[in-house]
Image 1: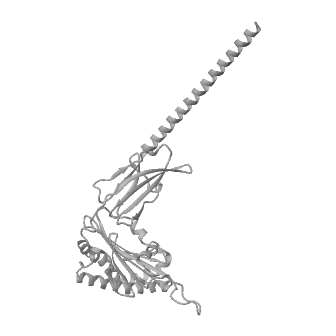
Image 2 (image 1 turned 180 degrees about the horizontal axis):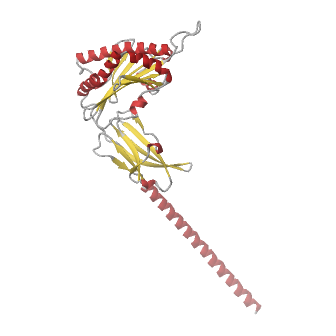
Image 3 (image 1 turned 90 degrees about the vertical axis):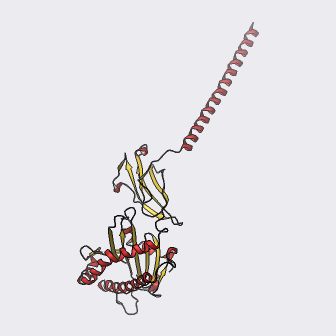
Length: 356
């Protein structure tokens, strides 16, 4: 299964819970995505890993080759042998950990054995996202989450060295893992120290490629359909991906529940586009404005919907033409009536003269 076909699995879980939280402006992140299937019928290996610095893929690894492959141009030929060896060893260790955890979860779901003679066990999937963020003030945040069969499953909490179960079926695994205090401390050490140090080394290698910025082009459009008026705020061609878009009414932020969720997608050229929509009452469009925050902006950018000047001009021209046509028709009708009156007057004179 190629790299381009894999996002369908990634979108099943985990990224939505990390990505939707967003990162503070001028922060960086290191994320590893692990995925695998218990049976090969899904076209996935038993274990596969993708590594991202911010939103750029920089390394891949799979269970069959047991090799880490560089995926970013800024990494080719620049990564030191020590860094690459360390990264490869980490991925091999996570390969083993992933398979052990996979079987543990399936055992606790009673799904690791064949239930009927001659019937193959059904295939299951496991997804993991782990990594860290380093903010502008050098504070850090770590995350380590598991998803099973496309649903949130377990989340490691480094502050308390325990696991949060996202569903009742995860409680057995949670209790089993919490017995192993050594593993919990190792996880916390990686998230709090090892991951940020690794991220800093990668940022140094990618300097220039990772810290470039493209400012968003922001516009607000107006749509009317089925008697519903919608304002749509669009931010185009920006990089990095971090962006915050929100609606203001009379310069005050709206409650998030009244606004459609922000959506951000890649353009395919290394930049991104995002949008957020809002239903409004007709005639109140000017009360609303869209505020956009992006690492490349020194201060938030605000945009409002402006009625199209060309549309107003066309309306004026059409109205003017209509008035001219009406006046022209009135003029023709007036001339016809004048002629008829003149004809009737002449006929009356003729009859009277004949009578005499």
